[in-house]
Image 1 (cartoon, rainbow, N blue to C red):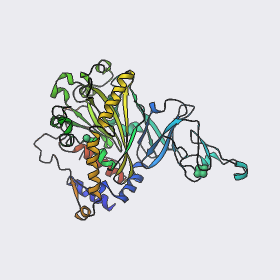
Image 2 (cartoon, helix red, strand yellow):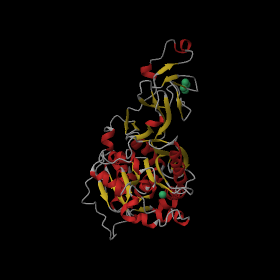
Image 3 (cartoon, rainbow, N blue to C red):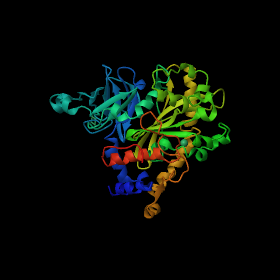
Image 4 (cartoon, rainbow, N blue to C red):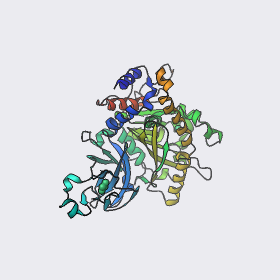
Length: 447
Ligand code: FES
Ligand code: FE
């Protein structure tokens, strides 16, 4: 808590102590105060469409099994056996009505109920009470637009409320642009990144500033004419509870054929879009400044851009990614590609490949980002820098000549700014993090 006091002090001056991006004790506190308290994304419904389907997931550092039972209900079960704690489910995904622990064979139904113990008569004399010995379950499980979230705390607002104030409004726009919605294109790709989960989350919350430097190579290989301009045409959508999205004024900057962020220019997409169900502001966002990246607090992020595949016309990819904390300064990155349900197999495959080409583990952009993030956690753990009390600079915008204020004409939820110079989205995320660590009710959407 002394460190959190320091963070609060620093943030008043638009600074953030480096240490928070790699600290043992703080990490433990994050797992207890953030990941066991708030809503955390666990699966998309299209990953478990049928009775008996399951996927193994994580909530913070805890493994969970997300199952669909015979009635169609979704359960989020702790993957720790009640006998000695072994992981009862050892596979990433599958279909099963029950899980048998590999250690001594206790068996649980896919709703978590204990249904069998080997040598029951001789070992226990009578069946163990399933009311006492079933798998622990996440007390709250809810879906929004196909996205399944779970909370390990009973004491959370309903999911719709957690996402209200803008996040669900934006998710609707991202997911329902074409009637029929979207589905996962396959299981998530996973890889270890030596970066802190907050570094990744704040990058996707609103760091457009890194594009011209870190991603300059995509200009060098002539996939884009100028990477610099993407900074100058970006703006923010800051929502309650630390959720943030970034959009780009593609249409104004490049021309009407760039409506929907470029994918309007790609044959096969725009004819399938239907804006009639949206409010006026959502229509404006779709046509003028569509969301390109964003972060749903704490650790789910989004990116959708056109994919400049080297052969043939560009496609569009939509990726949701989760920054799974596994240790201080270390994550397992989970990357799901999404495709629209209107797409045929060939077009869906093309977008999947395009997404991997840009943001797969060996993707053009991904490799840039993950290497830079490694440096952050190294600085954060450095004995020398700790001695210096190193703070990171979030002062961008303090003296910028640009108009950084919330757009006074904005009719949508939350706050909209016409520029991302100012690091407001990152602060929106970090303020929510601090408030959650302090166990205060989150307030306000910007610094
Ligand atoms: Fe699972 Fe013993 S630890 S049956
Ligand atoms: Fe990047």
